[in-house]
Amino acid sequence: MGEIRAFCFIYIAFMFIHPSIILGENTGASRNNKLLEIQGIIFGSTDTVSALEKMATLVPSSEIEFRKAFKESMHLPSESNITVILKSDVLIKETVSDSKGKFKFTELPPGRYEISAQMSMSPTNTRGVKRNAIARELIDLKTSRQIKLYLRTDLITIKGKVIDNHGKPVAKAKITAVDAIQDQAYLENHKARTWTTISNPDGSYELIDLPPTNFYHLGGYLQVDKPNALSYINIYVEAEGFVQNKGNILKVPLVTDEQLAPARILLNIYNNVLRNKGKPEAKERECLKFPSSTGNVITRIDIVLHKK
Image (cartoon, rainbow, N blue to C red; front, side, top):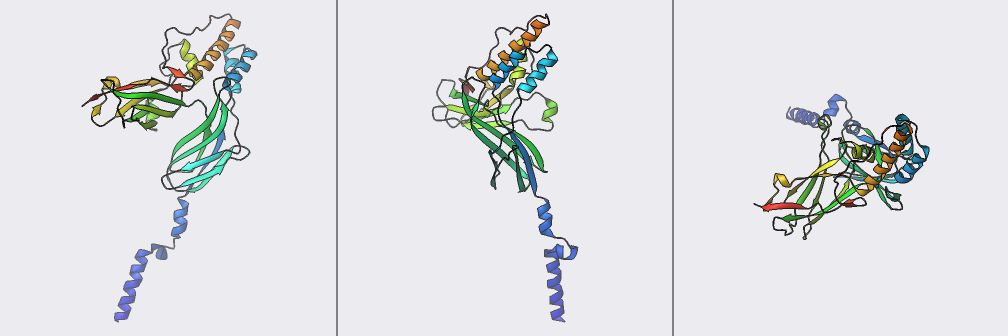
C-alpha cells in the first residue's frame, strides 16, 4: 500500500511539472509560435543636386506637373548586396540584401531591435562631395513586421561645448537631444526619438545621425512662415553639481548648408513655373536665421550650466 501511495504522489507531481502530459500540448511548438520575423527592403540615396538640375531643364508647366516631376526625380533605387545588421541585448544577426534589395530576419523573440546598414561613398546634397550612407531603425517587435530602410548621407552631426557660467568646460555631462514633435496625434502612438552622448574633458560633445528637415518642406519655409515645416530638437543636459536653467534649454532647427542648397534650387524651379503662368515669384524671406553649419555638421551649439 505504501508503494502505491508513493507511486501516485510521484505521478501527480510529474503532471504538475509537465502539464503538456495531461493537456496533450507540445510546449516546444508553443514557444516556437512566439518567434517572429522582420522582412524589409533597403533603398539607396539619390544624387539630389543632379536630379534637381535635370528637373530644372523640364520646366514644368503647372504646379501639378511640378510636384509630379519632383516625385519622379527623387526616385530611390533599391540596393542589392548590402549587409544588414540586426542587434538586441541578447543577439546579433547579419544578412545581405538580394537583387531586389530585399532582406529577412527570422526566428526572433519579441523585443527591441536595432537594424542598420551602410554603403560607402554615396552622393550628398553638395556637388562633388561623397560620404558613407547610413540606415538605422529601432523596432519594438511585438508581431512580425515589414519595414523599409533608407540609406542616407544627409544625417546631421551637432557639435558644441558644455560650459559653466564662468566659461569653464564641464566634463562627463550627459547631453540628450529629444525630437521636438508638435504633432500630438503622432505622440499618442509613438515615443519621441532621442540621441545621447557624454561631454569630453574639454566640454566638447557630438550628437550624430540626426535626420534633417526635408528640403522640400524647407523650400516652402523659405518663402512662407510655416511653423511645422522645420524639424527641431530640444537639448537637455545633466551634470553632477550643475543645473540647466529652463532658459538654457536649446531648441535647434535641423537645417544645414546641405539642406539649404537643394531647397533654394527647388524654389528657383518653382519660380520658373510661376513666371510661365504670369504669376508673381515666390521670394525667399529676408533675415531668416539658421544654425552655423558646414556641410551636414551644425557647429557652435554651446550649452551653459549653473552650479547648484
